[in-house]
Length: 465
Image 1: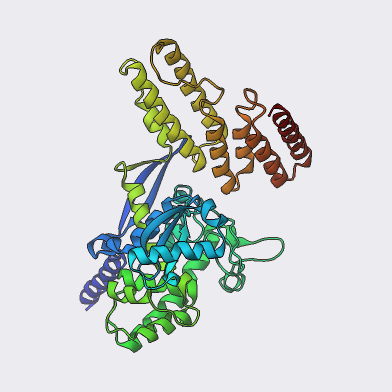
Image 2: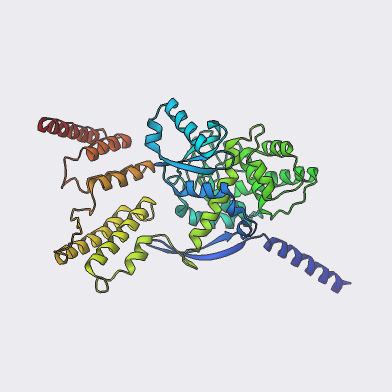
């Protein structure tokens, strides 16, 4: 009898173990190389996004573009299906009057046979917000925390990619805070301290435990309950089920029930979400519809990031490119072009906050030294070898500073603008930008200094006209 019981118990334990493993995703171990460290991290890959065609949906494709695009550009798109029909410069668009915007939309409606201009959205890029590379170590820790709390870790990765990627302290307009964007009342309910002295929502381990408890004890049971009431067949590992749970986490279970009741579906899956994205009910409106679309796009982009170079993820692309540089194996003009590619990569790395300013400048100085050498070799070439302290134009530096400013990295933007001021101290754009940035940092003395300098430069320019 004891032997039979032992066998039954062993089979029971094995079935539980298999149920925990079978979650429709693979745990992948990656070596993540930063500018100063090598990390061993683990992530999740959900194959059903591709096998079931979620990655081919126009909404997922649209948001992938938006996430990768900076806010300088806007995509004009058809709202109900997120089909892009044009791109416009954001500053140009914002400078237009409302009648001008309406006229522009009406003309596009006629060209693309859209029923009404109300059906056109103008969506700005969100590349400055979705700092996905910065969130890699946090995702790995959160996955472990969710598993310890016996909650599906898929939710940990998905939420961290869409809520406030790379930002432990990120307070929303409605008061949600931290990497999991927990409301104060919810955080306190699940054991976090939130008062005027401390806010544990910014602690990745504690907030992950609270978020996993919320999902495990509230969101998942509620979704299961009303799907059972509807007679819909589901598996907790189905991607569409997980996306409904995400909606419950974001919009609240009641609003999810409202939209499902409005649709009254007979089955789940991709087709259900096509209808959800075109249905509003109660508090479930455009922002809620976007949530699962952005989740899909973020997860697909994330898979692409961690799969780029096999088992190793290089976060500093400039280092990867520069490592293969060889002066001996390249003709001078080829070396010049190659080094410019390296410089572009390092600029992107710096903007993405993958390398600090000192490391960035160290690499720039190496590239500049190579440019100096090439300048002595390319005597008859028509290549324009720039030998300023920073090998680029003032306009280019201003653009880099602008990108840093949009990410609220004011000190780095100031350092970039100052690089070539010794060579061109009369650049009005740089002086104005420096004055504005110092005001943002609260440094009134330097703000007044550069403001006065800009004023003097304007006066000189006016007298010279």
